[in-house]
Amino acid sequence: MIEKISDRFNLQLKPTTMRQIVAAIICIAVILSTGNCTLSKKDRKDKSKKANKEIVLPTTTVEERGLVTEKLKWKEIVNNHQLYSTAHNSISHFSTGPLLGYVTPWNNHGYDTAKIFGSKFTHISPVWLQLKRRSGATHAVEGTHDIDLDWVRSVRENSNDVKIVPRVMFEGWSMNDYNMLFTSRDGAVDVAKSIKHVLLLNNFDGVVLELWGQLQHRKSELIQLITTMAEVLHDANLLVILVIPTQVIPAGGDIKFGTAEFEALLPHVDLFSYNTYDFSVTQNSVGSNSPIGWIRQNILQIVPEHSEKRKKILLGINFYGYDFSSSGGVQAVLGSSYIEVLSKHKPKLKWEQESMEHRVEYKSQSQPHVMYYPTLKSIQARLQLAEELGTGMCIWEIGQGLDYFFDLL
View 1 (cartoon, rainbow, N blue to C red):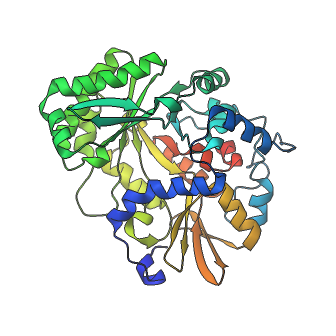
View 2 (cartoon, rainbow, N blue to C red):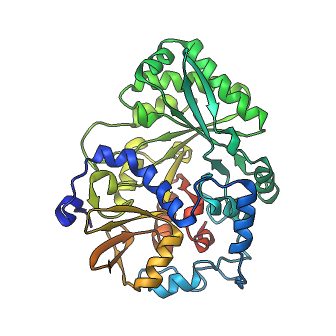
C-alpha cells in the first residue's frame, strides 16, 4: 500500500532530496538510540557488557517456536526479539548464493552480531573507508582510524572462511575530478593502487566500491573506470564488489543499471550489491520499504532469464525501517526504537500481502504514525525470493535488526 506523504500528511519533499538524506536519517536515528555516533573500541566493549543481561537463550529456532507468521502480535516481538537459537547461531541456512552483511562504525550492535553470527555470512563489509579528493589533484583513503583489527580477528576466528571486504565510498569529488579519472588510465590506476595499499596493509580480502549512484549518467566512462580499478585489485587477489542502484519507478524512466551494464562488468566484478530497499521514502510516499514485486522486477531487469549469472547479484534487504508521522516527519527506525514503540503503544500489526511487509499504525501525542519495519515473515519472504531467483543476498545493516532475525539466515 503506497500513499503520497504529501497527500496523507501535507508534506512537500522532492524525491531527489529524500534520496540524498536517507543515510543521514539513519545515522541520526542511531545517535538518538545510542547517544554516540562513533564509539571507541573500549566504549564498544563497555556498552556490550552493560547490555548483556541475564537472558536464557533457546536452542529452538523462531520457526520451530511458531514466530514466523503473518498474524503477528506486538507482544510476541517484544518478548522474543533477543532470543536467537544457540544451536543455530553458527549454522547457515541460506545456500543459494553469497550472503554479505554490512557493519557501520556508528552502530555498536553490528560489531557484536558479526562476531556471534559471522559463520552465516560469506562476506562482512565494515563501512569504514572513504576515498577523498584533496587539493592539487591528489586523493587519499580516509577513515582508517575506524579500522579495528582486533574485531576483524575475532570475526575470522568465529566465522571460518568469511571474507572481510570494507566499503569504500568516493567523497568530495567534483565532476572535473571524475573527468580526470575518466580521461586518464593512469589516474584510475593510481586510485586503485591507493585502495589496494590499505587493503593489503590490513590483510583485508577485497573491497565494496560505492560510486555508481553518484555518476549513473556517465555509464560508459564508469564501466571503463571500474574495469581498470578491478584489474589492479584482482592482480593482488582482492575481491571487487560493486554497489548498484535500483529503479525508483517500477516501470519506465531511465535505466540506471541494466542488462547492458551488468554484462559489460560481469567479467570484472565479483559481486553486485543491489540496493533493493528505500522504495517508498525516495518517492515521497508512505509505504513499504521494499515491495516484493518491485524487488523481483529489479532482478529481472538485469538478468531476465534464470542463469548462473544471478549468483553474482546480492539482493538487498533492510534491517531498518521508517516511521511516517502526520506532521510530515520521516524517521529511520532501528531495532531498539521499534521495540520501544511496540512496548509503549501496543499497536496492531497488519500484513500487506502485496508488498509482503507488516504495517504498524499508532498515535503519539495525538499524531497518527505509520511505521514499516522488517519482521520474521517479511525477511522469510525475501529469502524465499532470493532462492527462487537464484541470487545471493546483502543486508544493510546487521546491527540495526533484531537478534532473532538471524535464525532465518
